[in-house]
Figure 1 (cartoon, one colour):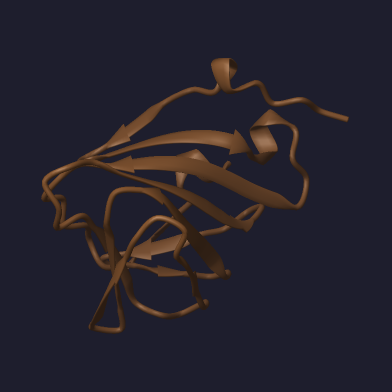
Figure 2: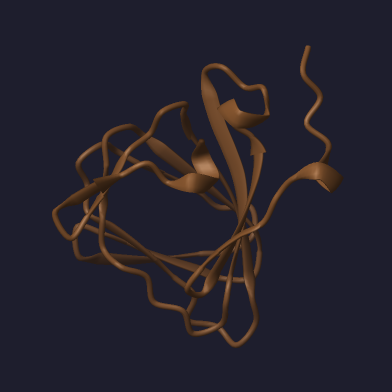
Length: 123
């Protein structure tokens, strides 16, 4: 039974996002990858696709997820499941940071600009 202490979670910065792997394979999870991200005010992410379902649960602030060109504004408590192959981008149109908990399957891969990557916060 792995315990994944928050105080031991690394932080990974990527542009306007700071991600903290919580329950991911490198920390003891075998089937799921769960991480928390803080999205900077005014951040507009790059469109990408995923090979597995990804679920976003907003904890604080306002998050804008654009799915296949359709913007959706989410508030605390709102959740959204992005399906494999949908084109998604993450943004924050508000003046305050947004915090979101994200969950996918272990081994999730993203394709950005024609390149497939393993997101480091999900490994």
